[in-house]
Length: 222
Image (cartoon, rainbow, N blue to C red; front, side, top):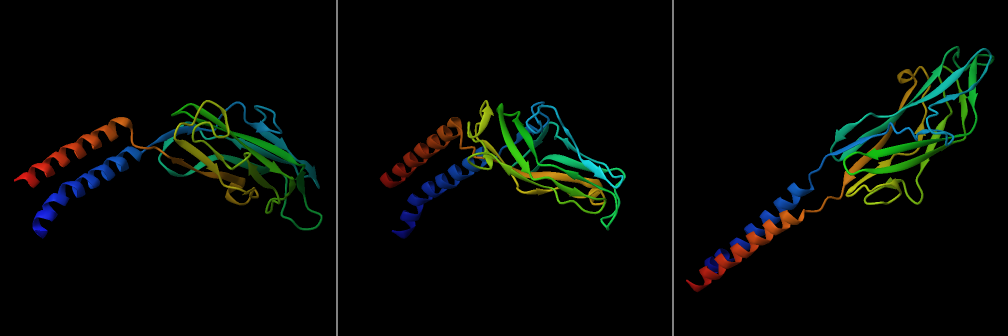
């Protein structure tokens, strides 16, 4: 009796495994994106990618944004762009040395989901700060009302739709000094997909279930 029950249950156990496998395969995804939109810029000025600090003691500094060109990735951590802080004549931060200050600013970062056609915006706000060759007090805090996420669908999208993909930006972003990583700060984030099994996949799974159920009925009759 136990053997017959096991035989009858086996098709449905196999079906469950097949459905889970199909769903897992359907959820595998790759997303192509870039952050080189011409809309990106400091202080809501499209295309303004260079911020100039006010030097003192002979110092001068610039903060330059560089977007990420088109790249294809899977789910996980991604880079959303870079800030490059250059302090040409700055010295180390000791009294009477050369440095520069930056006033408060905003940075608009646009993410283009080239796979689905969605465009989203992250807004970075900073109180500015003082920079030397060996130190920086600039921090950028990212916001995207009402959350730090664009997508899936049209969530916080400026245009188009992100379909099943969504992007999140890590915040805050502390801007590093020139003598740290050559002054380059990478804006970190994540990209994920909520991809559900496609109709064709579910239809295939349904056909398997029907077939296995018929097989189970035949076994019960024999």
